[in-house]
Structure formats: structure tokens, C-alpha cells
Figure 1 (spheres, rainbow, N blue to C red):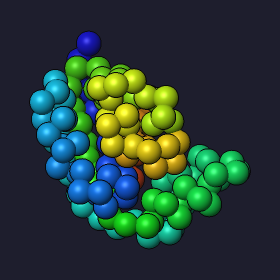
Figure 2 (tube, rainbow, N blue to C red):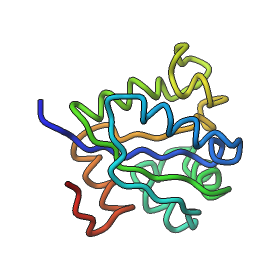
Figure 3 (tube, rainbow, N blue to C red):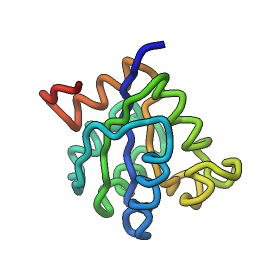
Length: 139
């Protein structure tokens, strides 16, 4: 398998709790490499645009409200099978069901405040990376 890119977001709950550095350290100790990183506060329009795929779902408004509640860290992670590797490191969406040793178990609290986001497929990763890093030339 060749190198792959994926998007990672450290959500507002992670940043507010002072855990962004701890999660970044976990990534740095993994086979993944951080090849781009931004610290920003999403506007409501940015959150709605990013999560547009969930627009008709009942949790959409709460998700957008949460994602605009404080700063986030967005990163491009690179490595062999990066999408699956990052998703394994994150654990399942619901932090309460996440196994010991996963980021969501260590830093999340529930299904909404689950510490991190990760792309779920190569096409999604390309779209998500382009959303936050338009025009970036990744090596």
C-alpha cells in the first residue's frame, strides 16, 4: 500500500480541556506523520459546509453548534494506510464504547464530545483536506 493522506480534527472539547498537545504526541508516536496543521475557530457557515453530508440528520444543528463552540486543530496526517490507522487510533464514535488505548476513550466523553474527527474513505479525505487546506501542495 502506498502513502495515504487523511484529515484529522481535534475538536473543541479536546482543545478546551488542554489535551491538544497530548493527542498530537500520540500521533507523533504513531506511524503517521503530520504534514499540515492549522489552529482555527470555525464559523457557523464553515461548520455547516463541512458537515453538509449530515444536513438532514437530527443531530446536525447540535453538531454545528458544538464545532463552533471553541477552537479546533485541523491536520493532514500521512502514512501507509493512514485512514484506517487514524480511525483505529480514534476508536468508535461513541467515546463510552471506545476501547482502552484509543484517543476517544482517553479524551472523549460521549458520542458528541468525542475528541477527534477522521476521514472515512480516500474520497472523503480528499474533499475534507481540500476544505481546510485549499490549494495546499502536499508532498
